[in-house]
Length: 543
Ligand code: ADP
Ligand code: MG
Image (cartoon, rainbow, N blue to C red; front, top):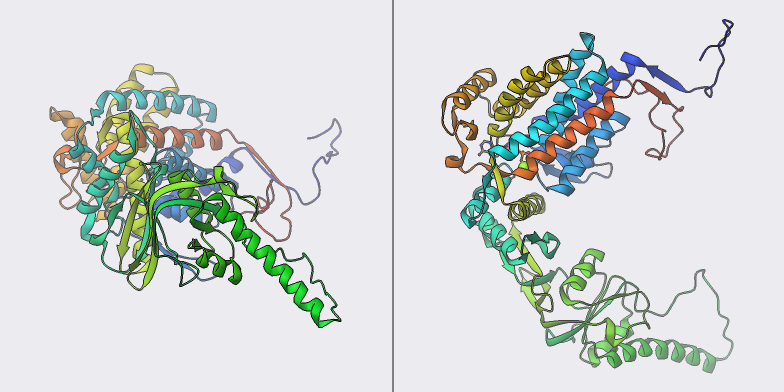
């Protein structure tokens, strides 16, 4: 940055902020730790919920790491990288999001102490990488085969505990396993076939599996059939109306007879839309946009059942279930685009009608139809079920599980310490810190449950050393004792653990390698613009 003379050469634009070396590292680490701290208190069945209120006042009450992080508006670039970890974990496994973020924060905290004692970040990252590879190996060694439905149910229960699903864990776990089994094909479980549809009313225990798709809509016209057998289904992502002009056009009509001609024309084109639908053989229509009143009338007359303003996700679900193609123009429908279902029926759920599309062409289309008292409860149950479905799906695919409640983490920690000693050199220090970082999981579980965390970790380590099946000993959150988690039914898929460790390690690596942050001057709102905007002037630890 400096020339031969003492005159600095300015290469950066005015207003650019630059932090270097340790200051940059510590700022980034502090920001990442702040994200981890934000979700740590939600970890585990005794974790607390968070109430999130967005700018327009909508309230979400959740315990789900990724949901929290998606909702809060994180600004610091390093903090954003940690949020990405949760999202990756969510797409790969559907569970373990809080764990991955908490682990990432702890890895960085441990490295901060190493940097303070003058261990170079490259040595740390190299040691961490060795430790992560070894941790994966250890996990595979301690994993147990999961082949029975009973085992799958335990996995579902573990995933559901702590979410506000009340006393209904058991019933929901059964439903989850049934749904996953129904869509499993060889060793693949396409959980996209399973849709969670919620409707306020009843109790959580009324939740059931529907073979098909359920849409929260009533027919657009009261004189349409309430039941269509052998349904040929058309999907429109356009309105079934006469095209409005882009701008307010004025049509000057001087002669009254011209007026009726004009209206006739409009009527004709509306009728043509329905004629075209009829000609394809369709008898059920779903549109994501509006449907003109005249079109509704003609459809009712033709015995066609129609729905308007459906969600795009509804159309996609119907498409996947019935084989219907989504059509973009009101006159573009052909017979080839139609999907098929044995029955489309409007049923009364509480006070509203809902469309039940069953006996679908794709027999693997399944809906978990969730009932419950309030919208907030339902939303949390929906999130919990989506997680559980993914977790059980992953377990069916991989066929491997490990013990939860901190059992796997303690075992990895113990084995990594032995490994560190065998490696020696400067990396040894980093591997030992990695091992220590793993303990954050049982520690946070204990803290959140209000049991002594130092005591708990000691008991866990003893149990792992002493017992034959020591590797499965995790923390009983009621008593703070170490117990075999296979007996307590706290079991998690192997993939949730490997993924959490790998992505936490990756983000720690990325953040540790940064020693220079060059931030453009923050531009005026709108915020969240891409690029490096929004990095400047951020105090350490800010999110
Ligand atoms: P995540 O978003 O990481 O899945 P959770 O809040 O679901 O976070 O907590 C998961 C952790 O809670 C795992 O470590 C899991 O083993 C542990 N856990 C789940 N059920 C129990 C239980 N009954 N007793 C102790 N620990 C449990
Ligand atoms: Mg979970």
